[in-house]
Image (cartoon, rainbow, N blue to C red; front, side):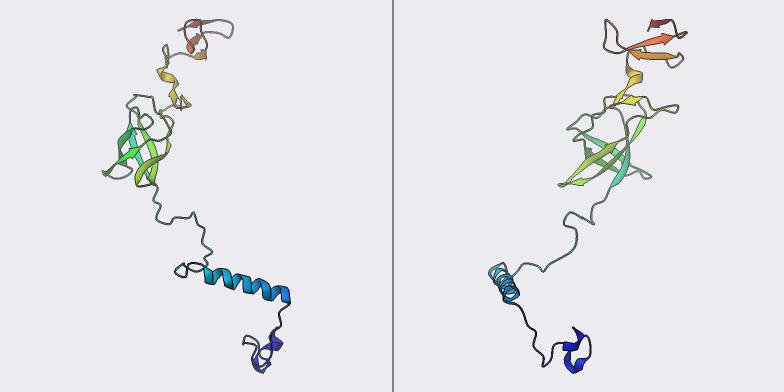
Length: 171
């Protein structure tokens, strides 16, 4: 309402002109003023920043080897440095005892270095990890043969060596 500004120029206060509120608007404004005045006077003003954003969150990538159970701490080496950190694994069990180096992504949560994600498995030829189980560790695995993973009478997981599509033998 620039026509209500002082000297009829925009961007200034109402000057000599009166601003009129409806009864409903006046009651709404009065209610808001009473709530604010009754509240904590030391409280900060309104903000439009996201309440969950934390600019101090630092995500780090590190490497480790061997098994790492849930609830256990492990010393990891920060990627591209010789610095180490003690990190707690809250949720991703690693049962492989292989000497392959795996990556871990972690950050500080409630004052503790905590795992965000662990690389499932590493091989130079293919990823052979399903649900954090390294299938190469299942008894009978032979990297030199074409094999099929199946269910056997004596074990839940069994490797079958495949010679042709019509024949196979359990490893």
